[in-house]
Length: 122
Image: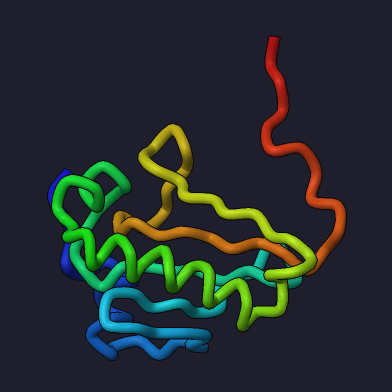
C-alpha cells in the first residue's frame, strides 16, 4: 500500500489539524486519542511516512527507530502509567483493524483490569 500523504496523522504532523500533545522529539509525536478507549489512551506516531511496522523497519534509520521507542517510553511516563503498567498495541493491516494508514502505537492504561489480550477462538 502506498503512503497517503493526506491521512489524518500526516495532516496532524503538518499542523493542519490540532492535537492534544503529550510528547514530541525529532522523530516522533505523541498525543491523546480523540476517542479514548481507556482512561489513558495516547497515540505515538513516527514523523516519517510509514504505513505500517514493516515499512517502518525497512525504511527508518536506527536513529528514527530509537527515537520512536524513546518517545513511547517517555510518553508512558508523562501519562502516569509507567509504574502502574500499560499496554502497547500497534494494529497493522486490515485484519488487525488498522484505521489510519500511518504506523502508530497505542498506549493504554489507567485501569487495573484491561482483560485478556485476545479472545481464543477454537
